[in-house]
Amino acid sequence: KKKMSKMATRTIMLLLSILTMKIHGFFLPSSSLRTTAHNRNKVKLFGINEWRDEMMDCAAVYAEGGTKTSSAYDDEYDEDGNLLPAAREMCVLPFPYEDVLLQGETKELRLYEDRFIKLFEECMSKHCGVVAMGLLAESGIIQTAPLCEIEAYNRIEGFGIFVTVRVVGRVSLLELTQQEPYIKAVCRELSDVIPPNLDLPNMVAGNIENFMLLLSSMQFQLNEATSTASSSSSYNTRLYSYEEEDDDDDDVDYHNMDRISLFREAFHIAKATDTQGYTISAQHSPEESERSAQDLTAISWAAFTSFPKQLHEDSKQRATTMIDENVNYRIQALDIDDLFERLKLASFMLREEKAELQAKLALAGLKYKKLDDDSSSSSDSD
Image 1 (cartoon, rainbow, N blue to C red):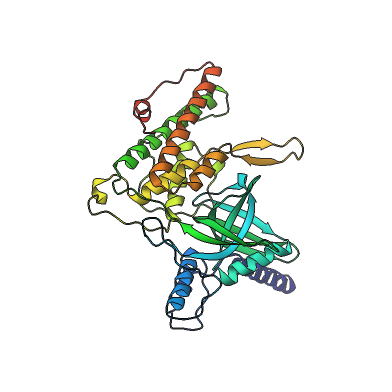
Image 2 (cartoon, rainbow, N blue to C red; image 1 turned 135 degrees about the vertical axis):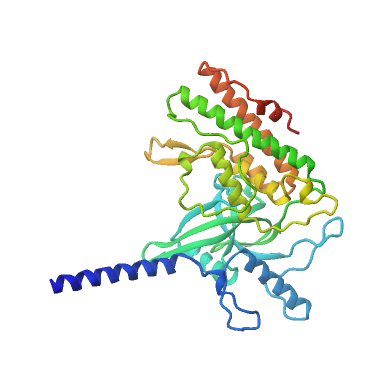
């Protein structure tokens, strides 16, 4: 019995050791480890904010007469004389354009080729765990690229590095500086143009919310008719609150969520990962507007990241994959740097989706009963 007890104790201790090692190997260091700038041996941090700070430090050193680093480039100005964000060299991880990710979305990767492992090492050692997502099309690489933060990783000997990346911004690829063994490019971070008056963006955002209610209701009616849905979802007139909520989406079951729930979840994730920063006009205070500029930005992204995912069984591989039929809209949304224009594109896309659902209902011999929200949603701006 004593031997059995000792063996059980050793087994428990071994399991605890393995779990502890896995946790430390998977998650990046916490921001709570930040030390003062005066400490030369400060802890290396990872993330978009540290990446931006590093660029500012390089520019400050160069401005004071120091040596210019390879990642710092001369200041440039737009046509109106405004200083553009600093350009810098960074690593680019290639993807087919169909895999495009938008604000707040994540992707899990397995890096096993030597070139991609080297790319990962440089991202972690020189770029604070930030990498650009290079979207490859037939004509070449798309100039606007999602800016990703390495959120978590795990090294497993013999299998490579398992990495989770999350989109936290966008960059414009200005020049490819290296293609072998991996891609590097000079990039400039992009930010949205925010209109000084938010009345029209708020009106279009309201239409987007109404469309979400309609689409969810129509989809339920269609599912009910085809016997693919057994219970109804409750619909609230308010799709989400504008208060901060827990953005931990690890345990969310997206497969069983209706359109409203998907939109609500996408909104909160997009808002939680938005570190762009906004300037509030004194002539248009937040009290006068139902939604802030940050809320409107989150809505503009959530409209494109809340598509219902359809399961498709490949006849060759007999594997289940996720199919997104709105890649072209997502690419357009990625490229738009004007908040109002992206909101209008989202409204147009949802109107087309509504028309498709109406056609499917008609084929099923059903006629959708218009709700009060339908009349308001049909008056959205183009």
